[in-house]
Length: 105
Image (cartoon, rainbow, N blue to C red; front, side, top):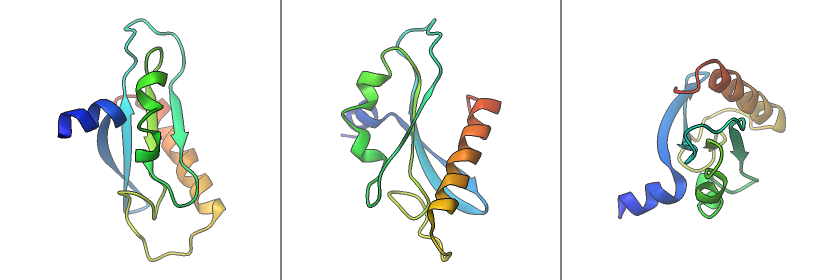
């Protein structure tokens, strides 16, 4: 059931990075007045945001949690580009910049 899945990994959205569709998920803090900074979860090689399904609900008790599908993984586009750690580092950096500039994007 879709509702159960969104309770486990949060709300999914697409973000276009360098012209490529990428997917991320977020779950807002369950504490309305939480002062803790948001947390960005980055999966390992061959994984996706779904691998955080048991962690996201627990971590979001006191902070907002984001999980990002790196380019080429999960529900993000399988782009015709050379993949490298440097590419993914730049993606994570740009995601963080965008997130902290506009936490509701």
